[in-house]
Image (cartoon, rainbow, N blue to C red):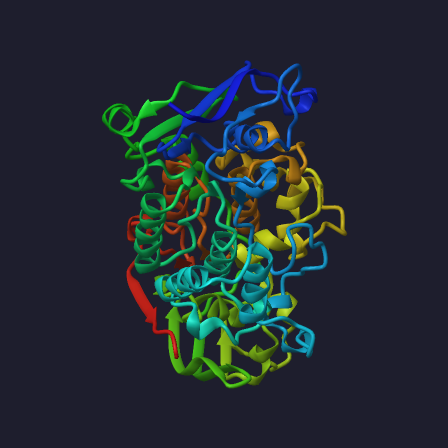
Length: 494
């Protein structure tokens, strides 16, 4: 049987990249692998070894990419990490409000169509068969209506569609995807699974999925490799893995921690208002494209809302208006905590009462500072930490890092953490000031089963406190906490 990839007793040259024991991994022709395991367990480290980013001592991985005639590993293996990136993965110029700021768009800003056509041209010679594949991908992902949209305006889910489409044009021998389904609405997830299944049957394409959410394994996967505690376990058949995997716990947060959250002292400067958010005939447009059209919405004190809708329906745009990250918010009739937008009270005063996490925020954090300083930046509503917190504020940071299971990594720098650990740090940042309004945009992105349950426990416990209002976005119904009592669904405008 043809071995596409074989790694035997692999040890990386650099000590900081090493797993707990030498790596053994192989995949054969016709196999499709799911790499699963807890956050921080070593999944991405294994992939870096597979693709050659972390070179090995003594002997390199062995590859047999036939029938592909491409000579380079980088041409045969494509690895999509799905970072929420509007530029290159190394782009450090992105900032939190950039997606919403029309002033950042000039005549040189590329559209989705421009970038996809560029990717198509770079991937090979133009042939009728390749054009058919391109049209097929566009149709499956409903990309046609995005072709004239500026890259910078794409939602988190739309970005994933764009990045996957541009990679599939390259016709790789092996396609590795890190958590490809997060941020996609249910229909798009199903379409992606069907498309990958179709591609795996029609083409000489091996698929490797890296999944934090191990109950999201599609049925075309043949084998599973578990990675935990920096160890790579032997490959097993999908059926055997499913029959033996651990059940998702019904509760993770301890009763002790639950009581500590409930018993937190209340602040003396809290807002106490009946209407927390009020929007009156709110309209948002980018050029000819309508995102929100005459939206009326009132969120009352103590309500817990689920915000849903297709990718590109305007969910994140709506939240950006509340947080005043969107410049158009000042032209809209929006009242927060009984303060009409533009009535005199500083948005920075209002932000002190809002805890917020989103894919855009995750993208904005590119500073490699200790995790506890990231959490502390939530006190000051800044991306970096420019003012030293008081000892009392640092104690609050330590408390929430303990609650989120981060106390052992509080001094590790942000960019050295796994993406799941980073998400937990940003969640702790959202809770650290005990906000009256909690806004959670895809809060469980990239979290493993246990951490997802833990975060749901924390949200449900927090919402038992007095004077707490919440708005949450997720594309997975089962991720909604039990405290949800209201729903709003946005419909995407054509």
